[in-house]
Length: 492
Ligand code: PHE
Image (cartoon, rainbow, N blue to C red; front, top):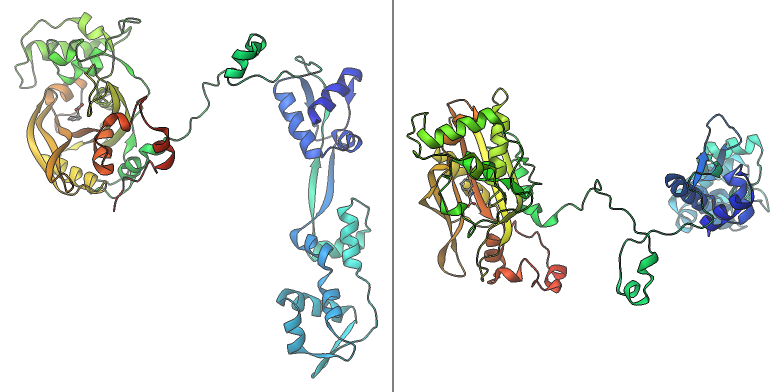
């Protein structure tokens, strides 16, 4: 209504000179008018001005405080108190019982000041027959926007029954995008639009790519866990790594992790490669040279793999197969500056070209954590993992030696499942190899302990879900999503 009124008025007249007057004339609340003005101004349908120097449009006015508003209905405390005193008088105790404590306190002092009552030793009695509730009348006048004298204003102000409010109004003219009627941009294309055929005339609201998304609640338990100070090696919190790139080059996903180019994981049976754009444009060239060298003939005490490393292979774009690709980028960045210890974590999507079954999906989420400091040991890794998993309710852990091209030693992590009465694999971990860290430029005594696990697997174990498709993907029962608290992982 307010919008139509404003746009309609401007169709006929040059200007609305005072939004306050305009609101009063239209009988619309001024706050509503102001909200509409802001929106119309934002879309440049109108040009609104609020010139602070323009005293006409900025007014100070008095409004009632909560207490003031109370008395417009119940009467001032002094009158309430007066009315509670019967003509024959009343004991203080009895009077106190009849009125609220605050009414008694304020009422007594004001009524004595007004010489309305006498507080005798035995009895409280009336000194006059009738009283007028001036305070209440004044408050009602102010509420109605009537003018009230200075002295009265002072009294009410001192008693905190009114407060000053700065009232701001606007003057407006047509803006460059003015139309007499604004078309509301559609945000959704609905079945009705399709059936009625009016989708053809719809104007869609543009995407706001910089809008902040809803915080991802599902990952909250694990995020809180990692960010809390509880982890033993935690002198300060874990920082979240930027994982907002699903497309990665083979270089960061595999090569820098000392994963040889013939490794089966780099086959299209295991990895989704991109067709467009099929290759990456930019890699740090001097670092590429060092990575190539370490693959081909080693260095830093390593023999390397002794094969012909190909740049084309490293350039190939893919959907990242693990978030360790992000860890490697972060460590490389860290190595470009004087060394400071770091603790990083991430929780995000990864992709694998796998046959889908009860426990595997082609896309899922990984939780990744790493601690980077001088002189860390395998003992530190085991300790961190114990702390981490026990906070997810998994305190019985076992570690099994394993192999990853980028960690040495490597350990698979198993947790004892009380329900299944067996040990189940819940993650993978290790200490990053010197073949990975030294070409980056990290100091020689810096060690990086790291671990990775799927988000879905411990969730399935904790919630007794036996088919991953019930947890994630297009087959998920929406009822489950609605009913279940998705972050109940912290079982402590
Ligand atoms: N990237 C490994 C995986 O995808 C997990 C891992 C992370 C292992 C870090 C060791 C160190 O399974």
